[in-house]
Each structure stands twice: as C-alpha cells, then as structure tokens.
Amino acid sequence: SEVVPDMNLRSAASIDLLVFLFAGVVWNFGFLLSTVDRLRGELERLANEDELTGLASRRLFLNRLSATCAESRTGQTFSLMLFDLDRFKSINDKYGHAAGDAALRHVADIVRRQLRQGDLFARLGGDEFAVLLHHTGADAASALAGDIVTALSKTRLDWSGIRIPVSTSIGITLARGAGMKAEAVLEAADEALYETKRRGRSGYTLAYEARRTHVSQLV
Image (cartoon, rainbow, N blue to C red):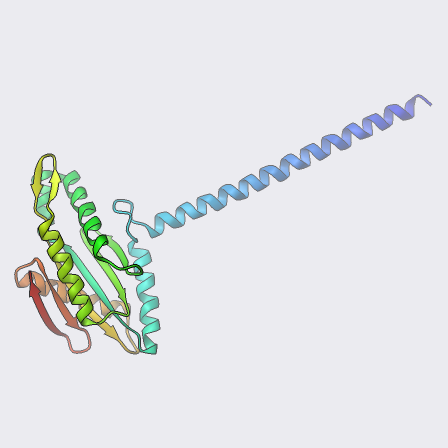
C-alpha cells in the first residue's frame, strides 16, 4: 500500500519533465524558425539594396526592367534613364576614394528629390545609375533629365572644406510596344549616354530606340 503513492509521484514527475522538455523543444524550434525568417529577410534586403547609397540594387533593377518589358507588350510606354558621373575617376584620384563614395551618395540624394513616387532608382555599379520611368513619354523623361542635370550643376559636394563640382551625363531611351528586350533597352540608353559624353558631357540625349535616332541637350 506504501509503494503505489511513490510510483504515482515518480510517474507525475516524469510526465512533468517530459512536458517541460517538449515545451523547450517547441520554443527553441519556434525561435529557430523566427531567426531563419529574419536572416532570409536580411539577405533579401542586402540583395535588393545598394549598401552605399540605399538605392535599389542592379539585381532588383534588372528584374523589374525585364518585367516592365514583358508588360509593354500590352502597349504601355516607359522610359529608361542611364547616367554616370562626369570625370568620376579624377575625383577618386585627386581627393581619395572616400570622397568618391561621398560623391555617389551626393548624386543619389540630389536625384531622389527630382523623382516621382513609383520611379525605380538604382545604382548599377561603380558610378553608373539608372532610373525606370513607368508610363513616361519622351517629353516628361527629357524634362526630368534636364532637372537632374541642372540640380547637380547647382549643388556642389562639400568635402573636408572643399566644394567639389559634380555633373552627370544621361542617356534616355523610350520603349513602347511588343517584343522589347531588357538588353536592347539598356543598350539604347547606353548609346545615348555616350552620345552625351561625345557632345561635351553635363547633359542628356534621348534615343528613340526603334529608329536609333538621337536628340541631345547639353545644360
């Protein structure tokens, strides 16, 4: 008669221990899943965001551009703006790479202020940037490019007490209709950018992708 209560107590203690251990396993598993989700989100952010400027990354931009090209088969018009900093290498060589990084952030901040909500602004690498302008025709894209060039020319970079002039050359391509490929749109904008440089920099060139004709404006 004395053994039964002792066995019951041991059984109850064993059950309590198992419940405690199981609860610990469940909690740790939930914590692990939460940590994995956070890490996955952080990796996705790092893949889609440029670390230096906080702009969209090249990966995200190219994915969105490809999707936009696919949507253009329905007749939607969009413009692509490609630009880089004029004589960026000389800034790095004369003032150092920290000044070069500051120049890139400076350009990113100035250009952001000119854009509309919904425009996709990305740093593609080095001093090369791109803006994807949905539902935007030639006139609106050209006006925006002119605003960007003017804003940069009026706002110098303050670096260690030195005011460094920063300007940009822009190439724009207008895309519309079926069969558009992201590579072709980028190539047309790139050609327009180098046309701007050939004509003297600090301005923009509009390329009508279908006809490969150029209209340049230096500011």
